[in-house]
Amino acid sequence: MLRLRKIIITHFKNYGLSSFEFTKNVVGICGLNGMGKTNLLDAVYYSCFTKSYFTNTDSLNINFEKDGFRLESDFENNAGSQKIICINRGSGKKEFSINEVQYEKLAKHIGVLPAVIIAPDDVEIIIGGSEGRRRYLDSVICQLDVEYLQQLIIYNKVLLQRNSLLKRFAEQGKTDYELLEVINNQLIVPAQFIFEKRMIFTQKLIPLIEDFYQKIADNNEQVNFVYTSKLQIESFKEILKQSFEKDRIIQRTAEGIHKDDIHFSLNGQLFKSIASQGQRKSLLFALKLAQYQLLKNYKSYSPILLLDDVFEKLDEKRMNRLLHWVCNENGGQVFITDTHKQRLENIFEQLNIDGQIIEL
Ligand SMILES: Nc1ncnc2c1ncn2[C@@H]1O[C@H](COP(=O)(O)OP(=O)(O)O)[C@@H](O)[C@H]1O
Ligand SMILES: [Mg+2]
Image 1 (cartoon, helix red, strand yellow):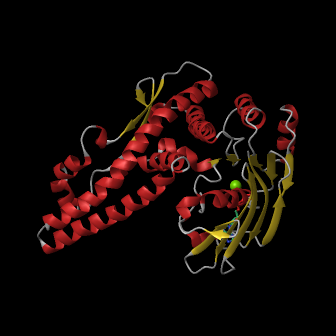
Image 2 (cartoon, helix red, strand yellow):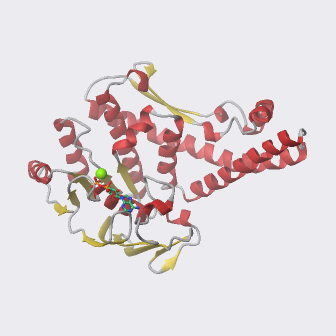
């Protein structure tokens, strides 16, 4: 069981000082555009992930007219009540605590309060470059494997070091092969770890994505998902050796797990080049609900689901089926934003949902 009971938001984005109590499993949040619906969901997301879903630049989360922000959230899970406090004083480093105990490493918090968000721009995962798909995959695995995020942080740090080393070699016109070998070995360890985890978790995730896609699209389209990594073909050591000439010329690391991807195909062709709007939206929901289901399977309770402006996304019939599934069959807590209060009320009534509606 996982519930958010209350959140106190101070100077986070457009908020002054606001407090919200959540009394039901399904919470509808309504208000006109720009009122702070998405920001409220992001404050909840922040409490679960120690960061915003929408930006990596933490200063953008501080109210423009203030010097810092504070989030205080009261969660309840099987272990009891969990008070999360995050304070950003504008000095760069933030404080993040659970039940008054500061985290030494923020990464340790990921997965403690599992959550899944579906936001309007997420369709980029499907139509955009591979980075969005890696980010999706990482956000699935980070919440299931405590070591994963730490290894990813190490990999990215060493990758930057290797790239600046390649630049230095180019500037100096000579390569220090010994130093290169040292840094290669430092890169290989986290790369191998991440690769193996991605292999394991995509094997579990992909059947769920296919399943949800069939359910949502409601037809027999042949969809196919394949995790691809160069490390499937050769050891990373060998890859680094083979691509060194290229690395030297472009002055960065051409190959590695930072180039992994998930290929989506529809009837044998690249999904993003032939799929209709509706098919893209169906796939987006399939990806996110597969993440939800996988988390649920591992944790034995439902994660928190944050649905930002989803009503425009699918037709009413599909939307209702989905909402019925997440709100009535899962027992998890769901937050749904919408500009129309009436629409939320109607849906709650139609689907027999005993929900709470908050007006901003
Ligand atoms: N750091 C910030 N300081 C003040 N206002 C902000 C900040 N970040 C975003 N906003 C404002 O928040 C508002 C958008 O809130 P949002 O949650 O996206 O609204 P909604 O989802 O209800 O349409 C915008 O008016 C935006 O300018
Ligand atoms: Mg919004």
